Amino acid sequence: MKRYGAIEEMPTAIQDAFGSELDRLRQIFLRPDVRDDYDLQTTRCDVDGVLHFMCEEHAFNRDRVIAALDRAFGSQKLF
Image (cartoon, rainbow, N blue to C red; front, side, top):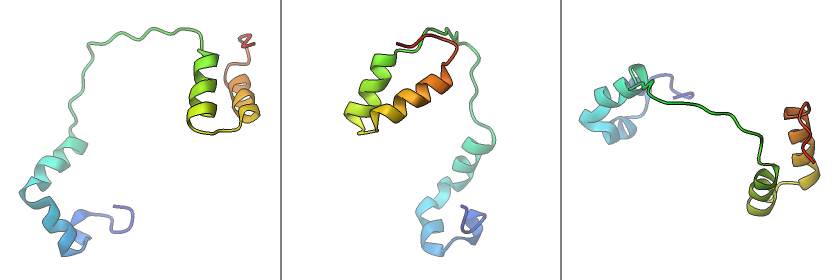
């Protein structure tokens, strides 16, 4: 979309891949189903969980993750 601006400007092969679903797909973005029957609850950051996920599972640098957590949640005592 960034390159062409609109699906009508894309190459024919790409347009054909969408076929007759184009209008339905467009409506998903223009008029998405929105729900308001949810309840958000905030809790303290699970620092150990974030560190495990970011550092062990995705190989992020531990010191950088800790620094980012400190910036994000500096008002809370993390460690």
